[in-house]
Image (cartoon, rainbow, N blue to C red; front, side, top):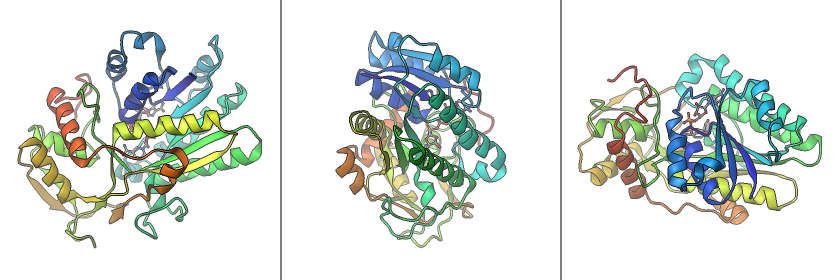
Length: 352
Ligand SMILES: NC(=O)c1ccc[n+]([C@@H]2O[C@H](COP(=O)([O-])OP(=O)(O)OC[C@H]3O[C@@H](n4cnc5c(N)ncnc54)[C@H](O)[C@@H]3O)[C@@H](O)[C@H]2O)c1
């Protein structure tokens, strides 16, 4: 059992991972500024974790760029923080072209602030949310961790920069235990439908968009390009159920805490690719709803294929995905039906 700081803990992946970590017996501090989430997600995590969940997860509102807040978290406890699981960040590829300064500030400078305070307090264990976007246009499909890191959008560049910073840190002094987890496309929700993906404004990701069309909040799905060099012309992605991803974090953390200090860089994906049109069809089958769509021009910064080679994660962490595409569609749909407007306190600026 460890005492953990979870940055961005109220977000989509953070909230599901908090639940998985609580179930493994860890005690948590969740730090979030709620710029893309709601405090209600963590209230629901406490309920799902059982009656003692609330005592074992302390929630702090704050920004990772604010070192005073971080110092209070690291310095204000009877027990030291053993490790950090670092989710906080901005994640929309399209938005990163419009606001590169914000992306570098939050994702890179924010991580720098966090690492400086961790070092001051002698905490040298971190699990970092990286992304398959670091591969850019991958040389080989499926893509293994030895492929070149060549991001093609500002968001991916910030993730690659943090990976590099962490590698320099690991080289600089002994004792750092670091895992860079390159997620492919996280989707789905906890099967209870209590927690799920609740983006503020127009969703950037396929699954919340499709769910909102199915439930009638949005008129139609926009598919960015049907002229890609893929079997049906729409982009192919490796989708991973968020509960599988949460369990991947538990496996990575366990390896870091039990083994000698090291840097582990691994893909977290299923190894299976689905096109956008295949997702639409599966979602229609799982929900019994028709999903109208329109084809629009390709989006800057997208690639035709993104599929993980999951071999390293399996061999190194003993972790592999268990849930199917049907589970992903069904669980997203349960969440969307029970929570058509997310956690209910998030403003939605527009609908198409
Ligand atoms: N969802 C994906 O498709 C995906 C894929 C690959 C990598 N990732 C990475 O995984 C991490 C989590 O993603 P997610 O999908 O859960 O996103 P999310 O937006 O739901 O979660 C991120 C959380 O961080 C918080 N946050 C943002 N800036 C902050 C700051 N300055 N200080 C404190 N809190 C801050 C947000 O309020 C939010 O709760 C991100 O780093 C993201 O880049 C996500």
